[in-house]
Structures are given as structure tokens and as C-alpha cells.
Image (cartoon, rainbow, N blue to C red; front, side):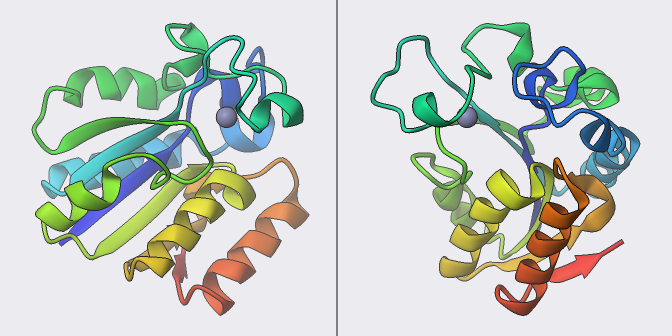
Length: 182
Ligand code: ZN
């Protein structure tokens, strides 16, 4: 069984006016994100939207010192971007679609993602979204440590720079044994 883990494709990380935006490279994967999601939905595979959630004045959070505020609770910055956002509205009530709030880079950190995957006997994860070298990478590392098979579609991940993306793609392949596909 397989699942799509869709990471942080929100207005704050993607839109021009986003608070921590990767801008053009992230916007360039909009259609690929949408098409990939549609493929999993049409195959009746599980799709997990694992989305960064922050609160104001969370001084104990390490990201407070590292990044400007982003993905704040109940803001439009946390909504999924563009075509994927519109498609999510159509599919969100399906029983194979999940929304999991996360506080850290990895989709496994502090969430019940691993339990939900194991309940469904899901062993193969396709991980997409942003940023390739931060949240996608940290999620892939946890998935590797938990024994999942990993696939990374390179047209559906994005980084701020091409060199950061290439580093992460090499790491997925050479160190985590992931399948990196087009
Ligand atoms: Zn964050």
C-alpha cells in the first residue's frame, strides 16, 4: 500500500506575498503537485497533507530564532496554494484524505502520521512539496528510520536554490535509498 505525503505547499511558503516564500521555484511545481495528488486520489491511495502550524509568541519554538513568523494558526498563509488549494476543497471530505498539523520540519515529529500509515499497512511513501532540503528531507529521514520505502518525484519538490535541491536529491538517492523519479 502506498500514500502521498504532501508537505507545506501553502501560501506562506509558495505565494509571492508569503511570509517565508520560496517564490518562483515553488510556484513552478504547482501543476505537478496538483497532477500527482489527483493521481493518488484517482487510485484511491491515501493522501496526507502535513502542514506547518505556528502560534504567535511561541518563544520555546526553535524556529522562532531561525525564521520570520510563518504558517500562523487561522491565517490565509496556511491555506494550500493555487490549483492544489482549489482541488483540496473538492477532496477534503474523502476518507483517504488527511490533514495533519505539524510543528517541526518532519511530518512525523509530534504527529500520528506513523500510526495512521501502519493502521493502513502503508509501506511506500511518495513525498512531495517544499522545501526539498528542509521539510521534505527531514520527513524522508524519519521515514527511512521507520522502515518506509521512499519515492521522491523531482518535478514535485522545490527549494530556494538549485544547489540545495540537488544536494537533497542526491541525499535521498545515495543515503536514504529513495527512488528519485521524474
Ligand atoms: Zn515552520
